[in-house]
Image (cartoon, rainbow over all chains, first blue to last red; front, top):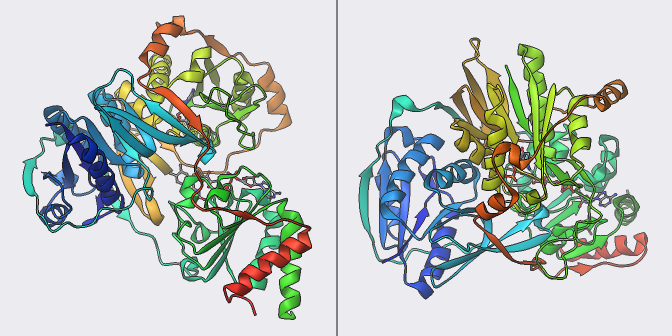
Length: 327
Length: 265
Ligand SMILES: Cc1cc2nc3c(=O)[nH]c(=O)nc-3n(C[C@H](O)[C@H](O)[C@H](O)COP(=O)(O)OP(=O)(O)OC[C@H]3O[C@@H](n4cnc5c(N)ncnc54)[C@H](O)[C@@H]3O)c2cc1C
Ligand SMILES: Nc1ncnc2c1ncn2[C@@H]1O[C@H](COP(=O)(O)O)[C@@H](O)[C@H]1O
């Protein structure tokens, strides 16, 4: 029977959400095609995690253990997974498009000579022929790809797109495999995991966030959005380029590599809506976006949109609110 | 330390993206191109390493004839690159990251290097794949999404920070030669002075054809494992309501939304 392999992702003994999203999509694909679904977990001392994974209605859970896999190791993952996948020859291997995923999947695919498509937002399979959809131009277009010559495929899948699978109550068998990793030959070495430091400001607790993007143009223009945030009583957030430029501290950054926020209102000012930003704010109750580009992807995740120059709108909005508040 | 930097020429980010009638791609006629944002950080990191440790910075780009490759490479010269190589062919419009990496690998194999840098991603195709694939093809260890680079005293290995999600990072040691994919914010890319821009205009750009690297256009296109079936506009997750009117009228509508949510009195 053909097999779909889902590589689980864990950090510090906890599964990351994308693991369960991959499982649910794999189940959907197998419903029409009758594939066996195997979950693979890499680590060291991961017995409990493997048992947990076995509750999600998979056909099999394989736990690949090695001391070097205690912390994420790209070389370790590629060595361990390539020998495992060579043996299993799955029709499809699914990996999360996380930093780990984008770090090892391309090397693994090249090693195995599997075609890889990264950051997929949809997958469909008919007669063992896979089609995938991914975005380009930072979310402005979708592109559907087929694989004319391939019979085995590898994909990385964008997190937060698919609904996570739930526990089924049925327990699948767990198989332990000891990975053969030539530790002496490795050219990289894990030194340390650094956790986010506790910061003075925590925007993730705010009811309203005014978030500023590269559209602000210059550090000298920041007071325009700062005044708006102050008038509303909102926390000030930012997209990555504003932080990269040193205009605001990292603690303000919303997105994949910054904070995940879920305020009642998220007001995005001059932010295009790249997926790494959207991932951190799409749980907001109401999103209002101001952007001069009517095709900016941020409008795809907004409740209200204003297509205009932010410099025309934001100061007027600040004044209007100040008047109401009598300040 | 000799560093090779891969830079991609990409359409300006504010470029309007229009899907062609056949729904097989986007209309590229009026595109203007610039250096990929991530690659400008990779270039800066390379130039800073050279300034600290000596050595040479070589930039490599591959692209179609209309991608303004010379413009991008001259900017690299003006910002401190010592040598620039371009591979030019129409085929690059249609390549996937694996096939592009195969071409880049052939160029880089012939160069002297201790370190290869790429960006984390190209802002047009967003594959985040070419750098790691290239490392594999060159037989180099790699670290991706790097936000800090330290060099050991004997210059035999690097200690780098790899950015993970949600403010996590991990520190990794990697022996040289190696490849890193560079994340934005790692440094502050410099501006080029007018003098350096002028000097850059006179520098030589080495031009390679596919044949110089043992490829042909047909062979390369035949290596691409994927086929574009359809290009289409993304489905919206929420039905957005556009607010219209004068700035005052729009401000008033936003105020009403905030009031509805009980956020202003
Ligand atoms: C691994 C990885 C992690 C990342 N993590 C994050 C993250 O955590 N958070 C994050 O934000 N990004 C992150 N990014 C970067 C992300 O891909 C985008 O580059 C970034 O979000 C773009 O920020 P922006 O929208 O402010 O800038 P741009 O994409 O440059 O958009 C600027 C917008 O402003 C509009 N604009 C310009 N002028 C005006 C004006 N006068 N009035 C109105 N609108 C105007 C433009 O139309 C445009 O839409 C990450 C990338 C990678 C590869
Ligand atoms: N055609 C190209 N020429 C030179 N470098 C490239 C090219 N395509 C991709 N790269 C490099 O690979 C990185 C990642 O690109 P991508 O995998 O397309 O997102 C870029 O930041 C560049 O450093």
